[in-house]
Length: 89
Image (cartoon, rainbow, N blue to C red; front, side, top):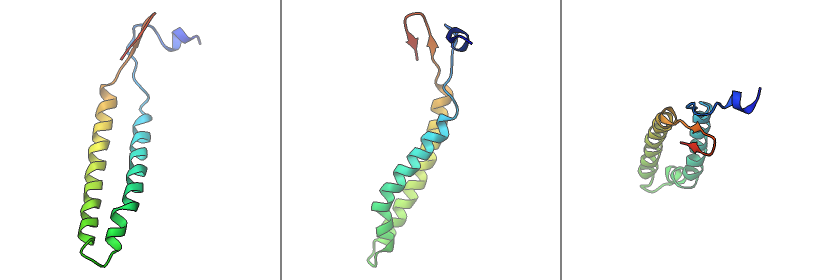
């Protein structure tokens, strides 16, 4: 199979749907790293900080839901076309 058969010129192409879970997992791992340094120590403290830690966990869940929804919609709307001298995105 040649490159022109695999990537026909002037035909709209879409990125692989496998990128969506990869970006969501990447976001979750990054957010967990931040939570390990901020929210979890607050939850374990004796002062009035557990409420702040719980609020941070709630914000994390909300951000995760918004990011997952945005990522899926973004990849559904994305397409590109290959031409002789350019790529249109």
